[in-house]
Length: 466
Picture: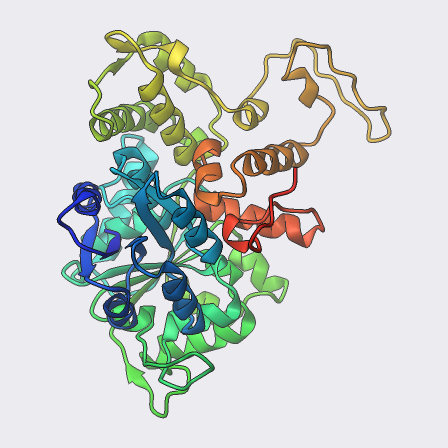
């Protein structure tokens, strides 16, 4: 359940946005002003902030940055307030929510910061066995390491474990380790005391304290830097944490779940991940298979998403036609459940008539390139071969001769460019999670590839390239 902080009154259109978010499972926190909102962020914390642009969004974002509070802020206002919206984005707001609110956009924003709180949709025998094992270990207090490709549903599994545990009455707090630089991550995890650093004007609880009595999910744990790995290990061993600038440790009662798409054993052998921390986290390992290995789940998941997005968008619930079902079963789903969800969401919006037909099923270019192709005779291209000249009018043929990682990179960067650097919108179009997109962009920067900046990273008056 996402914790949504609303800064502003609930009597008007912002209140409508709050009701739509609550209907999507969000837990609401309300503050009448930005100062009170900061107090809530320092104490209870939140996963997302909706702030009315009649307040000083720039001051709020700047103060949060100074206090190392990494919660994303969404500026909310009417579309006629375009200048105020632009100022808020340039000041650091992650996005703009036009009022009156759109249910689909709110759902996408909530999904970008936290996984779905719904129970896993499972029919595949292997997944049913995995879910039984997860339910069994949920009753214990041991740490669990959840592994699997991006988009397989690792956070959904973590929420299932929490809901089936003796800690279900407590908070479930999730933190994406890969999304934050080390300086912010340390404060986000462990909190800080007043005066711990420049801008720390008040004490603040970190994720460990916010999850006290409940469960803390550390997503993409393989991206954590060695310094913080050591501090995390101590927190697990001693069941206490040290706030930045603190004079005494703080006792915490938290169960740790960790998730990663990496092979942590290989990371240990390469010296990038501490062996003692690996064994502390990997008491129980749950590997979620990719969707291509659990074919019996494809249609139940598709039906589930079709119902959900029809209800969210106020559209009639349409059954998948036989042709649509065949098309879904024939695809490889390299983006896993996240790709399937995005495909069905788009199909719900495009469908006409009484059924959700095959004509509404659109597979993205990246997914189509990764899907098995029916080629009568295999053709091997040597590394020294000249580039293939694609026939005109065939967009898929233009991909032949390129490596898969190049196709994926070009598609991601082009989509991000067309979204004017908006990470949330690009991830939705690509059918991947915002976490996966950020990881990819981090890889590209490390390779020296130019990455379009987010709107909040632009200087006043600066325009995106292209």
